[in-house]
Length: 546
Image 1: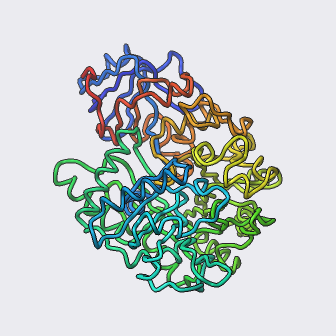
Image 2: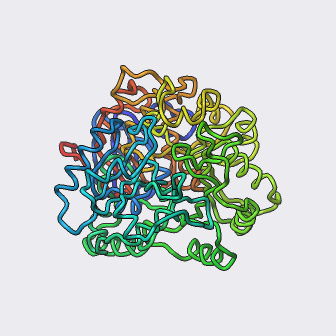
């Protein structure tokens, strides 16, 4: 053997079937692939190589976040961070401070606004106009599907009443047809966003590089990007070129899925399909297509069998569901992976029906449903038979709903549907592949707290909180699989990644706590000692014995 690198650790979780005997403690890497797995004694005979000894630390396959929006998040997270604030007075105070610190002539911005802060009052521009002192302002709600615009912002955009869209988007108006400032879904948001000053390409590239480094330090070796907004591919290519010039690469693997939206035609689908075949770099690629069949429960744009408590969430995102079905047939027929955003029960049922109707002889590709927030037993059973992959975000449950169901999401759905929320354990028990992620910037991206939340069904570090649907808690192994082996299966990469197996890619995460043995709250408070991509350290904490 002639490895380039040997990594030693007290515990190695291979995630490749049953544990070996004796338990592995060493991994050899050559040319970015795993060459051998064994004990510390075995490693002494593997030949000369760079050796990194992590002592009692724990080595796992590299963690992958299966749902993030890094480039879109650059724009969404500008301005005042309102995440986690559920008191309207506190929201107004932060926005007032943001307005006071924003130079004259510039827009006031905020993000992460939780609709629970408004209590029973409707979300309305009058609640922010005074604190932003009559200036144009756009406050993004946490769900990334809605925003609140000030009166001045509506004036800049020329929005004076209702608008018609090709998708289920809305400029919300009062009974007199006057805009309230609430904008639902991308098409409505774009009416204002196109008038807002944008950062320079160089500034966005700098911030994207910093974000990727933060992902890496948090333990991520890969991400599935569920959008491809303007400039995304150019930013990835330019950032990778800059890092290559400095002798590095992107610190993690990046899989991008551009949006296919209502109103698009076959010519647009052909263009998207061509990107999947051609747009790629050394560690990034366009690898699938993202579609939507609904919006979110919180803003009334999910697709439910029965209306929510406001009489909303009864319409599909594609005004013609048949058009969505044709798009699925187009991409699936070409072996192109798809991921469909479906939150409500009717939305999930529609996606299942679209795939159930596909011919059996189509090329094999991994197809996914994203979010899956409320479904009855019958849909869990159909999901298991469909072969579709579930992609879910544990912190959506733990951060934005409450065990007593007094939150906006639960009250809109009512007890019966809220009780069927985020059925991750039931999907796993039914044999469904379950990929996990954060949906950043909707929720924080740090994976250790998410792994903990998946087991606790409450926010890690908050033991006083009651669990939300505790029967849906994942085991420690199931949670880790959601970021490793099941993440690889969701990407169609199980043959090359997702476990520590000879011949697979040498992508690893090293912890100072055991994700399969630690109490979940302790896991959330743990640290990542290293991340490795293709046998190269992308993050390495100080004090490691080399």
